[in-house]
Image 1: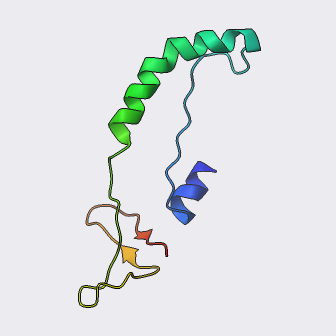
Image 2 (image 1 turned 45 degrees about the horizontal axis):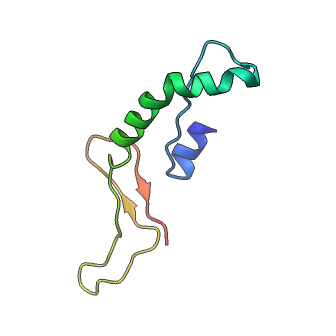
Length: 83
């Protein structure tokens, strides 16, 4: 699903593994949260503003451009702007 969303929906997803146990007991979840809370918050603070965000507009009229293709030299994945 992550690959599909990256290629077709311009959405970059990640999976975080918090433990070597795939299905920890419910009683262990608060401990897992406490063990990983600061690292998760630091990760979110680091990556939340990385990348490009904004509006694609016509240079002359200033009108928004739907479905504009955004290409960056050296990156082999173009992004298509939304509405």
